Image 1 (tube, rainbow, N blue to C red):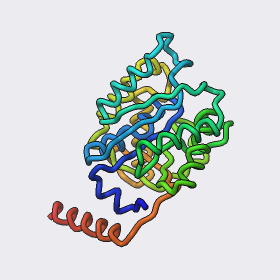
Image 2 (tube, rainbow, N blue to C red):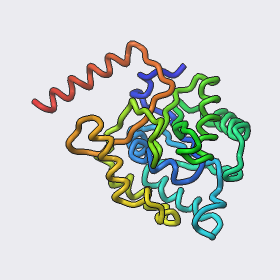
Image 3 (cartoon, rainbow, N blue to C red):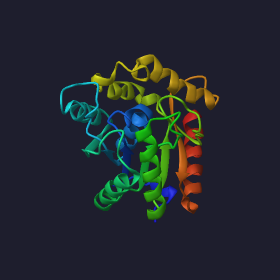
Image 4 (cartoon, rainbow, N blue to C red):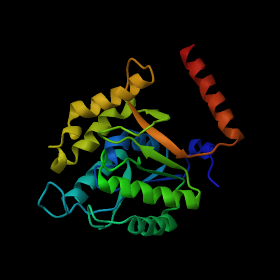
Length: 237
């Protein structure tokens, strides 16, 4: 069983992100994934579709863009070819279970569930299917923030990405074929990251927000928190 304290014991830990499209992973979580990679986590990104409905007419563009983003945040990618805007929850469940058998993740990050009138149809189907698998397999699960229309998203976990905000911006910038979208623009990226900081009462810095769907702790968690607080006091003094 994975415990919250395991997240602080990062030797050979695996985080698996599961998203419908390439770029869905960097918009809400590039900073967090970069920090995890720097801390020794194996960061793996599963993309359910191959970019057939991408803004670029050139086949394979999204694959190349994802590979470039992965080099920045320290992630490796695996693409599947489910049909965009038409894949089923059962198809996603099948892919997810097969990948879990190979990668054995300690944590899964995916889309936050949202009604289709607010979010992308593919994001919703992905969220439902991945949640089903994570629940049955008893794997910790985090939902990441939607890039737009935050209705229904209730974050309860925030990551300070100030130290890697330039890497987040660079990773998103790798998806040149999608930069015409408003939420891919630099000002939108920075404003949302600052918004989450303000939600925490922070005057400065940049944050990413998550909703923890499944997580648990053991006694070591409280020791880790105490040690971290002590280290902060020492640094300040």
